[in-house]
Length: 457
Image: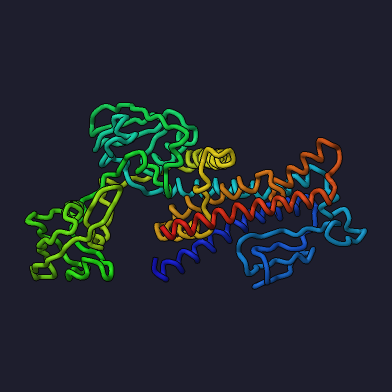
């Protein structure tokens, strides 16, 4: 990844995280103010203040801090300092159990509401995607066993319409988490639809790497033919040593006419360590080169490699494009349903991680999230909105987990207070919060480890 791409991804990550943190803290702030609680500070980020403003009758501090990995709303509270007698009624700790619970719950609630708004905008504007036309089906895969064949279109999964590959992936993921039978409705051209089924066992999810659900099922998208044109060569590798350059078009290799990039790759793979003549077109010249593919072991097979990549493909052909779009009212319904679906999916994934049915390798940290922030931001507004919605749902669900120091931990304390008729002692709450902090640090360490492991692959 170039320095420009890294900078763009970092900027997109900061914008996305800052926006979602602001939404979360705004929930706490807005409900606290309406509950009559005095707010002392509204901070986005931690650490040294980069920008500060004092405003309002309560002289509330609005702060933008140096570390943009969280935020907080500081309220008047007797547990954190002396409170003047005339303002005791505005202290957070003096509020009823219902008001305190509402203030705490409001943060995650605003994250869910933001996700609904983001999904609604995405659905009304229209989310572009690729039609789910099946290309190659891997031999021996689940897709092949189910009877799926090339050139069929997946029009629905479990009765849910799937106009794009992203919709197919999302619908199948629910079945993967439940380790159940998934039904796919297929159509070939103008022929009537037919239904096939795939049964996904509970271990299948741990075979998926880097979100490659379709590939693990044995499904490949229909791709337009990629011309046999060199896009780049790796320094010091066979392609560069033989004299290949970016922009070279491969005409013939090993006495075969080369029609597209796939054929070129197959020829290279089939000739490890064997010298071969290559005819290329460079600008208006036709040149002859000799190269010997390096000998490489891959999945127990000996193949050839030269260290060259294809020229990036052009725009997706109109015949392969699809747009997922709804009207305003239908969009609102589907946005709400999508937010609920993603919340349940996130919770089930976390639950299966806790009981060991899903590998912790699936946890992602800030590096992976920043990478996707940059990718989705460069792909367009609707794609970035979809990213924001998913992350907002994740923040809402994570904050509601019953882990001390999180909103869900505070709600757990209030539940205990309601049951026993009084709060837990401050000392006991402090010990539990220390445990919660250790749990969060452990989870963050695993997520960061996974991030670096993906980079070093």
